[in-house]
Length: 205
Image (cartoon, rainbow, N blue to C red; front, side):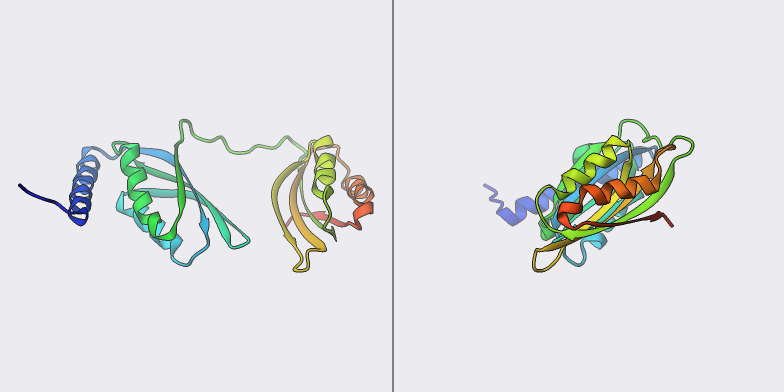
């Protein structure tokens, strides 16, 4: 009787997986797009490990975005892999690369090419810098103003002070035609008056 230990089982499993990868890579090279979403505590070497795993599967990285908040990061990739690769092969290979870093990984199929964001004629882009006391309800009141004017918040970063008493926030905004930036800033300042909010709205670089 042949008895295979845990390590032996792992090697057999890895060997089967590697042969499956090679076999599928040889079947054809049409590419298919996948969305990779990852979250974990931020550590050095994560990006190198993930991009190496993508390259090992002959994948092509199309787009990437990363955000770090309080020592934790989220990263989203758009990557193309040979269409002959099964989802399980891609997922398992990426998870093996992510495991040492404790990364939670989600792999989603991109069914149709994502349409580029197109803004209506007359849309203008601004950067809004905010500061004030850190109290419940601040973000809700300010975001309601943006929604009322159909302003698209295309990016946002906010931080609380070390003592927790104040905050700073930067938003990137797309203002529809007809929205007066000066009026918008005045409304923001009026809504945030109870929180000591100051606002600085300028044309985006």
